[in-house]
Image 1 (cartoon, rainbow, N blue to C red):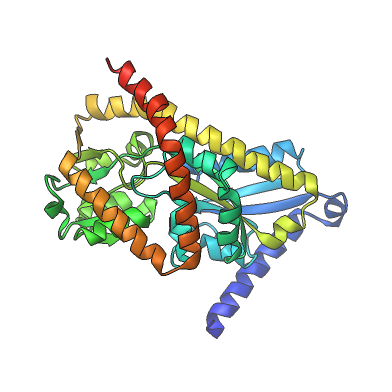
Image 2: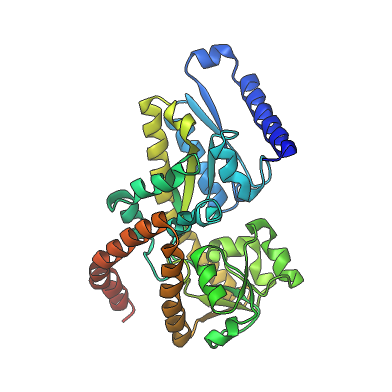
Length: 361
């Protein structure tokens, strides 16, 4: 670390520590009261994602009767959006909220946790984490970054994204300037796109200025809130790149270890509750948001052609296997996810898919 960066980090940590001490004088600490800060990768209180982080803080504070209170800060308020994992890992901040694929530069295996193209849907992904061995694997990944992993929400199946260029064949990805993080972005890159990762708060202006030709964010609820319909011609589906998206709530390992057992359990249950809450909110609000986009704003909502999806799926298998091949932990997680998906597919097909087909008759 460069000397000036070390001094900057130390000063930031000292300022936070000083602020915490001022807010929590000795008598409060003696009574077992604790105060944590949470930094997020989202604008503060941004619908669904930012409010999902706020729900975790609210649940923890209320369930602990104030013994552990959590203050939430949006992207840039404490640290830049993509510096959140470093701030939590080094102990400058106790808790963070984001998406696992943002940390692939720290550990390649992180990107396999959020979502895999053409992989598990939300219900299956939650099942993998809680009952399929996923929690232990996620903890193993996050420990390399000095953090404890919790699922902190799930977007459900996402939309394919906003485009100012029609996608009629796989060739239309060539030269496309596309914002798409994670493994989906690597697949798009392999198809010929120029892929960039831009924080959510900068996406609309990047689209309006022509810095990018296309972007994916989440789905109708969040996309309407950001106003992407003002800058793009086409709204594609399905979100092949993110059939679900687990959001991560990550806690500094030392800070979590210092909590008494009951507060550790409260943090754990608060994150589980917030995951259910966010998944439900996304589903509840996206229907009406899509209706507004189609009706009020006349958005051209269209499917990716089947041949494009088939070619992207074939390309996805190669890209994902190639990325995992270079990292033992990535291989371990991918093998677990693929095994779980194989076991689930038959049941999902005869239950969920069959019911959806019947409902559409």
